[in-house]
Structure formats: structure tokens, C-alpha cells
Length: 597
Image 1 (cartoon, rainbow, N blue to C red):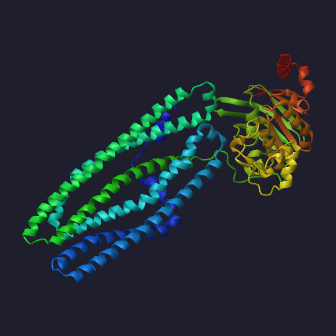
Image 2: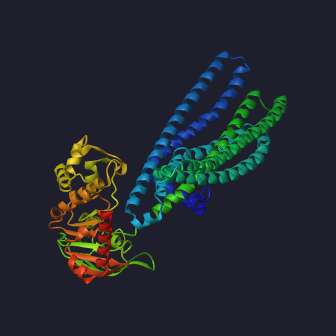
Image 3: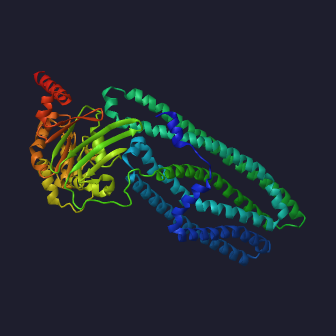
């Protein structure tokens, strides 16, 4: 993948974008009560934390200095009680925020996946699968971190800081101002750290994207790597990519390892100033020893939320970047949608009409040019042509995977754009050349979630495609495990299973897109033997490279460079000695050559 693609993928916008944040906060509306409860618990916990130095001051000045053991015991017990209460409040607050984070993450993932299912196939042609998977997984996980440990925590840190500043000024405003002298140093250190970490974070994300892409690509192509003995070369390439990622992580560690000690040094300088001026005030009887100890504890607590806010900055920044990418996906409007008013036929008889259909994937590059033909109900029509002639594009338009730019396609006299998409596709069956098999079992791969398809219908479909005997010999029969993408099945078995899937759905119109082009002769014969029975009383469109499989078709349509050039029966087209004749002769010679070779 080119570098600019990685930068486009991982570019970071503003650390805080109010527009994006407003959209994100909409996901928390169903859980408003939980979040308000979490904020109240956090405020209560922060207040209890501020009470602890006060308890220390009272214990020292009122009881320790007066040698009042009984009073000191009571204050220690009260201190322990406050600690326990603070722990319980913090536990409840963290549990609620983590739970809300998981619920929001769940909602966003469901919305993204639902949206992906509604997008047209052209969108997936332009967007790599890995990038879309990242949206559903990694980007949503980043948002979970913000909702569960960032949003409420930032609010709590700010409230705690304000409370500590007020408490310091209340105890001794002169001493507080002396303590704040070092704040400019802290602000400068934080700004430098934030700038450096921002750049490093971006580089880490870019290099991680390269690593993921490299691993995914080469695992998928492992058979080729091993076939050509490229293991050492690929390992060396991976070593370089992995090393550059490690260097960025080490650089990130360096900045973190520098920033936090710098904060500690600034804190120590502040403490030294505090001890010096506090000691002078104690000598002048304007400050008690207990007040000084409480003041020191408050100052130490003052730096904790500052450190925490520096870390939350990174979470906020990555959340803004992830949310921008997620919303860009969610804002992509589906191009293939139902009209507000549709007029679906009550029943599908199966008449198909293409009228001057023109289609292009890219403007100005027509794939189909003014294609017109009619398929009568129950007719078996074959579409042939060289690779790139537009055969598959024709079928994609019929299923409304894409929309044509000119002309019309009608089923039973109704334009397919006026038929609800679900209704249209429920009447169409498709067997593709490249069959996709899901992990699960045989029954699940045929039903595809349709609970109204009974087991006897599945058995009948498998029987008609001559696959029942094989399935029943496997351990578990219809419930036998099928590996991802049908790894344990042969190419022919995958296509037979796909054929059974189409039959179980019992479509009125059946489309075979080069369904026998990748199977052996014996398997092809099995399908051919069943075709006459399978296609009875059903409109069928067959796309085939092997012309021998469509000789009995009622009509053969010949496409050439996106145009309908010939149409007729097998013998009629051979007699014309045109494009179909040349294709047939070419395949006949190849078949004869293989037989004699």
C-alpha cells in the first residue's frame, strides 16, 4: 500500500472537535441516568479525598499535639471510614462507567455493521476489507476507552483540581501562591510532551497499519511464499517493518519516561518552596504544623490529576481520529435504495426485459452499451462472450447490486427500481463462479438464517444436486462442521453446496454465473444431469465459458465489448459463423488438443 494511503488512514485531526464530540455524546443518551450517577459518585469520591488532609490536620493540631490518645484514635477510625467510603464510591463509579463504555461500544458496532450491509457493492470495490474491519474493531475499541475511562475521568480530574486549588487558597493563600510559582514550568513541560507524543502516536499508528497490512497479505499468500521459497526474504521484510514500529514505541517510552520524572522534579521544587516558607510561617505562629502537613498532602494530590489529564489527552486525540473515520463511514449514503413508493408484482412469473441498458462502473467507460433482449417466463437463456464482455455486469444489474445509468430492466413489466430490493432478491437465485462458504455447518450454509426452510427441503435440495450422499457420510450429517470459506471442501463440492442453497430458497428466476467453470468433468456431469429437473417451470439465465454446457438453451445471447452482437439457438449461431462460431471452434480445438496431448 502506498504511503499516502497510510497517511490518509491515520491522519490526526484536532485533539478536540466539538462537532464530533456532540455526535459521540448522542450515543450516551440511553445511559444518561448511569452517567449522571457516575458523575455524582465521582464528585462524592473527590470530596472525600479532599477531606483526608483535613482529618490529618485535625489529628495533628487538636489531638497529637495535645497528647489526646482517645481523640487521636477516633480521628484514625474516621480517617479509615472515609478511605473505605471513597473506595466504595470509586468502585461503583468505575463499574458504571466501564459498563456504559461497553454498551456504547456495542451500539456503535451494531450501527456500523448494519450500515455496511446496506451499502452497495461498488463501495466495497473501492474500500479494502481490512480498513472496514478496522472501523468495526480497533476504532470502536478506542472510543470505548474514551467512554469508559476518559470522559467521566477528565471531568473528575478537572473538578478535583478546582477543589484542591480552592482548598489550598482557603488554608493559606500566600503559601498557595508560592506553590503555584512552578506552574509555568509544568505547563511548558506538558505542552512539549503533548506535541512530541502527538507526532509519535501518529507514526506508531501508521507503522502499525503497515505491519497489519503486511501480515494479512502474506498470510493469505503463504502458499505462494512457500512454493517459491521466499520465506527468508519475506521474513527480512517483516523484520524491517517490525523494527521501525519498535523504534517508534521506544521513542514513545522515552518521552513518557522523561515527562513523568520532570513532573516529579517540579513537584519536588514546589515541595521545597512549601517547606521553606511553611517553616517560616510556623516560626512566626501564622501556620500550624498540622496545616502545613495537610497543605503538603493537597499539593501532592494537585499533581496527580495533571499527570492523568496528560494521559487522557492521548485518549481524547485518538478518539477524535477514530470517531472521524467512523462517522465518515456512517455518513456514506447507500446508492442502491428503495423508492418511497414501489409497485411490486403480487407474483413473479419470470419475464425479464432489458431495454437499451447502458452501464459504467466509471463515468465514460461503458461496460454495457444499449443492451436489449427479452427472457420469457420459463425460458432458459444463456449469455456468452469473452472475458470482459459484460456478462457478470448484466447479472449484477438484474440483482440491483449496481444501478444502470440509461434504459430500463423490467420483471413482469415492472421496472426493477420500482420493486423493493428485498422483494426483488427474494425471487432471484444466484450461483456464482466464486462460491462463498461460511463457517458453521451444512444446514446453516443452505438456510443462511432462514428459519422457515425445513430440514426436508434442505435434504431435497442436496439430493437434486447429487451432494446428499457425501454430506450424510460425514460425521454429524447436516450438522457437520464446515470450515471458514469451505476449506475442507473441493471446488466442485462448494459449487454444489451453493447450488443447493439457491434451490432451497426456491426462486422463480435462477441465475448461474459460470457455475460449472471450475469443476471437473464428473462434477459438471452431475450438475448437468440435474439441470433439466431443477430448471423446470423456472426462468433461468446461464453464464458459461464452457459452451458445451449451454447447447440446449432456448436462447443464446452473445456479448462482445459490452454490446449484444448475436442472439439465437446453438445451431442457428453456428450457422451464422460469427462470434459464437469462433468461440465454439476455439474451445473445440482446445478440448481436442488436450485429449490428444
